[in-house]
Image (tube, rainbow, N blue to C red; front, side, top):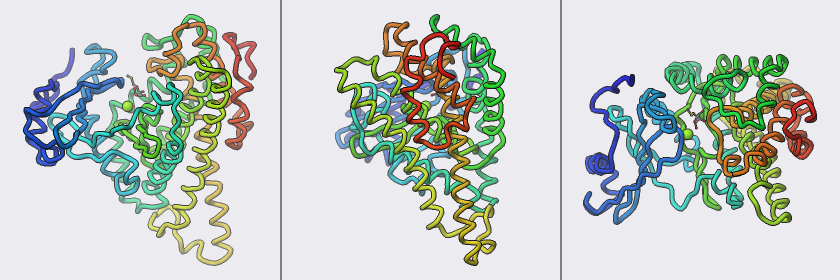
Length: 432
Ligand code: SR1
Ligand code: MG
């Protein structure tokens, strides 16, 4: 039985969308004309929410409403509509730091759980662009900038502990979506559960993951770190479907999974989806030389993303007016202190990388044997060929989880991509 969300909530029809916007001066002005002139399109294609694009004579807006259930599963899987409040709070919290790298939030209605946002046009979902073989030369640098700004400015390096504690307290209430992350990302892929979708050719891989105690121990470490290491405010679901891009503009969307946790979680999530795009690409068709070129560019993106994040995070830190309670500047004021501080900074970002390697692996595994799979692989119609692509990504993930010391640097990860390609459907014969 669905719990009825509180009044005045009801699931929006096209008519409700128009009526809602008609009451919002900012939206009216942006759309222009009269409500009868506005055209509404239902464009929902994510897992959870209703999304409408509305166009008027002068411009457009995007309207997103939290449904009281998981959209792709239906009413049998209820989900708290209050998740929209956390997306609104996350967007507002980061806006001063990430500026034009996120869509503008025009309005949030806490009774109807509706966000009215900037309509992004002619942006495309990054994942769809990658599948189509398009290039977005600046996108990974922009996402790295977004993550670096968010990670620094919401950490104890930048803010007084009172601010940090308020973020922790607020986003700790985002429990419905953290339940999804804890279950779907960290738990389900390593047990047999109804939600998992394991393609028959990947049954041996799923069984191998379930049986591998060393691997599950590393997953447990990363899960505990996600739950306990309140390092910075995370997007919480930073995959290539949470990024919209044009060749020169990039926006990070959909912060409803916001949570204060280890910075490496977002970094690893985005890396994971670039890596999966790399493994999927040869199965999307096209001329062999074009595939090689595109994959080389994707491998370059993997490195560029991490290296840009690392460089920008350190620059932001060095340039910042020290205001955080985590690192009193007076302790490092003399020359010896300043030199030591720089070493400290390097080890801080090295630790983020170690986390990111683990979360990258976990995110790959959940997208292949878990509930929420991704179009990069799903568009490969032949299940056997799809499993070949996925087998390579799973083999890499196993290595990232079981031999993290072999991936001390992003160059190690990039170099490893081809080593696991064609790992096949038999985990016993795949490289370890
Ligand atoms: C119930 S499906 C949930 C998944 O969809 C979102 O995009 C997140 O990735 C989440 O894990
Ligand atoms: Mg989303």
